[in-house]
Amino acid sequence: MDFADELQGYRKQRGMSQENLAEVIGVSRQAVSKWESGQSNPEMDKMIALSEFFGVSMDHMVKEVSGNQEAVPPLVTGNFHADVTAKYHYEYKSKRTLFGIPLVHINVGRGIHVAKGVLAIGNIAVGGLSVGILSLGGLCFGALAGGMISIAGLALGLLLAIGGLAAGIIAIGGLAVGIFAIGGLSIGMFSLGGCAIASRIAIGGYASGHIAIGDVTKGAYTILVEQDHFSSIQAEQVRGLINQEYPRLWKPVAEGIIAIFE
Image (tube, rainbow, N blue to C red):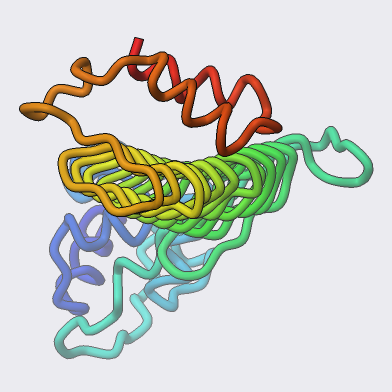
């Protein structure tokens, strides 16, 4: 029996499809098909993976490829229950480092895999630029991200956070919490959104703040929007209120708010 027949026999004894085996070894189904039809033979690294998976010695596998007809060691029969999806994993770490940290570290796969580098990509990523399900660092992208600048489903940023739920000095999201908050529901010192709640200036459909500007307002000083058009509000009116209530407000912030109505 040649290698092609042996491989097919091992696979069927495990109750596996060609797709299952291909995913375990990290190749395409077409590659497994070619091995079993005798059109090609696996490369050495794939041969090693096959021998380890089927519990067959490397010598035995190599001899089968070269045509040796030794007896096939027995395999455990029965339905295949192994978790083929758990085998997937890829890792790359650059040899170049910065202060002992790899410039690039990629560590992804099913399970928990941590990447640490200047550029880090992993299930969990920690780095200057990090991309992962959970990412931490300077500039972060992921489902959950925490860093200087974070863009994620749940984003926590010391400076800027953008996400479904965002919290940071500047927060932009469906729910935004920050000193400057912009979102569907925004809560902060200065808030802009569908529902804006602020300690100082709130602008939105519903606005609640010391200065509140919107369709529905609540605050010490309120300005109502006419017919849902913010253009109905005069920029000088807003400027006057800001200068009256917050004369020491940082000018770029004041001018940014006023610019909304110009």
